[in-house]
Image (cartoon, rainbow, N blue to C red; front, side, top):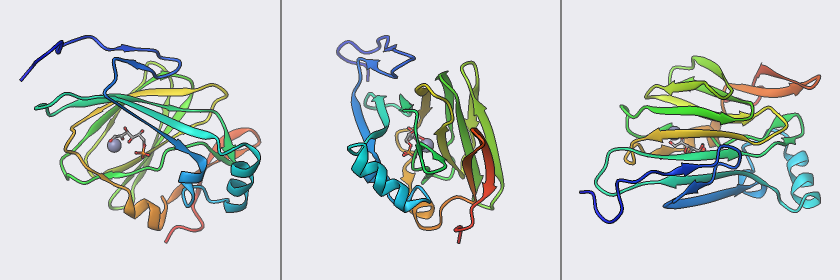
Length: 190
Ligand code: F6R
Ligand code: ZN
């Protein structure tokens, strides 16, 4: 049931990803992303030498009694060894929960992997909206020099399952080779 000043417009700053108003927010620093990046010594060096930098920021807008919420993710520019700053990546718990990602600023890549091992990548630049089907894991990387910001929308009951990717990784890594992103098989995938 709508109440208070809802429905309302939410202003999105496309460069910072800030929402006004927002109903939630979290930040992921590099030290919270151990086991996500394959080069563990490079990660520890960056945590120590760069004062544990923020890798990404998530702002959200949700209202009660609704089957949709949305937010922005801002991935800052950076690398850990030869890997671009990226999100943890997850499957949704609900087998029918899809999502959309829409690029607002910068240059990113959306890496998708189905439960049966198919892979897809979507180059994310402003103007591109990706449909993430149910049962596909999704992770985003910033492959540019500026913030990569995208808008996302899904069901608040989708649920987030991080365990499989934490345990096994994703089958493909997006590495920086000669200054450009290149998709390679993950040698540590198990
Ligand atoms: C929600 C969704 C995004 C991500 C966010 C951070 O279903 O896909 O809001 O949660 O981009 O990525 P993770 O959660 O993978 O660290
Ligand atoms: Zn998701």
